[in-house]
Length: 379
Image 1: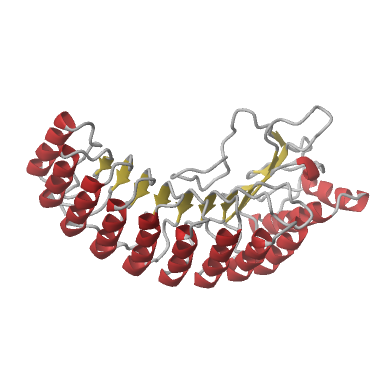
Image 2: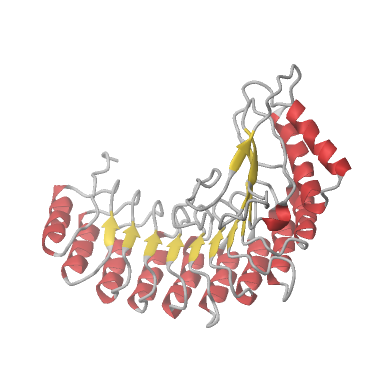
């Protein structure tokens, strides 16, 4: 999957033209493993798979199909290898290995012909991520990499960043990187920003649900604003970047290099951050989607965004769901729509009364569709 603005927490869905097969154990077993033990075994096995395909490794991995998680295990573990476009019949690189509570796993060993590796809910840890980065040095064909909820931390992020930013070898073909839910902080984000700045093909970066603050956001913003930047889609949702981080990213929006989709949901942006982003929008023509859902943005922020939208002709979608915008902010956004803003604005679950909703309805009729504004329950 080439990830867009709303990126799933679970494994990516099947796409046309991508061969994927889930292979499950056919045998019935009496024993079981705890979910954490299964994750640890799978993490070790993935590292072994990437490092070796000899008979001993195969034998060890195949032991996994004799195990299953304990009944009631809730969190799925998934390992997926995929190839796009579909390889010739003599290549067998498209297997995915999945264990969902009660399922087993069997393995395939033709990763050299695969271009996607998606690992979800494995207990790699920082040391395991460093080991994984070392193993991936031999697999420069990987163009899409996901390590979701793997606890790789700053050290793991830095190891991967070094591999991405290497002038040759490593992950030189990587176009999409998803490191969601990995306890990555500012140090890891700064290392990844350096990789973004030096890597000429990385177009999608998902760092949602980590611990990145204003310093990490500033480093990423600087990389995104560089004249050589190629990254088009960035998800920093659910990171504590605050208004200061939003101000840095506003400079990247203002630079208007390659960025097309920016997701900052649940980032504590507030009115101050919204004002800065509005200034960026006024100078921007390339950004198509901006997600500011759940950021405590009120009328002051909405009014500033309305001014930015009035000057902007490229934004297609502005998500302001679950904020605290009242009638004054809604009316300002409606006025921006009437003077020519091309953006559909989602104001569901805000604080408008009927007067604010009437203004939005009028803008929808006279200035093109304005996204549905549903009233929030009384607060």
